[in-house]
Image 1 (spheres, rainbow, N blue to C red):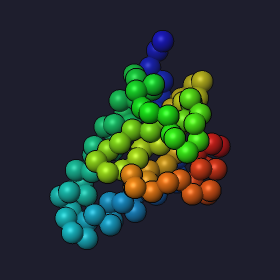
Image 2 (image 1 turned 180 degrees about the horizontal axis):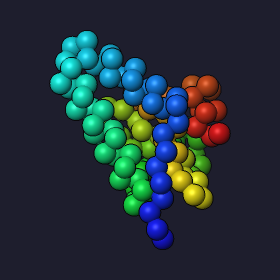
Image 3 (image 1 turned 180 degrees about the vertical axis):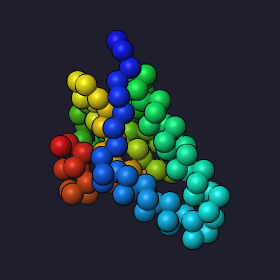
Length: 104
């Protein structure tokens, strides 16, 4: 199977911006490192989309997550692409609003 394209939803990009701004209050360097690691993890999904775990709150095989430091990078495997739908702290469960944007 050919590599699938990885696309970020606007909401997921906003999540990353919010996380970076929060971390940058203490360390701009660490904020940049976290964002870089998130981008690299997402890029790796193009070759190995099944590598993440099924999101336990949703229990759907096409909705998965990879942990990047203490954050959950949540993505949906679609026929022509991988959609990064949300990035949330690992200790948070998905609220209804986040779950609905992940499911689509």
